[in-house]
Image (tube, rainbow, N blue to C red):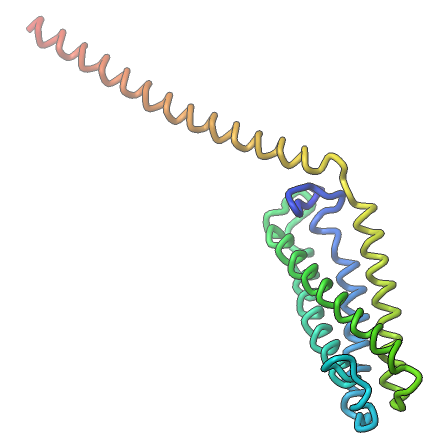
Length: 211
């Protein structure tokens, strides 16, 4: 199982090891998608319009999370599908996995910043705002997402390969060496053909001179 290369270093997990994490995150996000959709569709947010942090009130905060979760679900479905492709040693069908993980990281960073906004909102308005269900949902989302991010950080630390960058450099050196060897063989083949053709021309000339 070849380790995946991210940020110009090898990591101690392969692109086919992301099936279970993708499924877990997918089901969790689908559940939150349903909960937030129900809350946004049923609850009256008129009382919470004045509870704002900057330009973000409680409804906008939950709506922003709904959009982020929708994007995350799409990415996780693609990660799950790509991770099932190929075999353990045949990883070429999963070459796009690193770009999917970069996209997932960008979503996580945006989600992290949105959680900061949520924490500021909870600190300022949790006691005063009268919308009970939405603010409890916001609190639960923030707590669960912090747990998820903590687990991602721990998993990243566990899969960190100290020699990963050296491995990438060695791999690139080997590939360049192979390419150079192929080029030399190609050039040597051309030289051999030139030598043979010149030798044949000499033989034909010698025969013509004898005649």
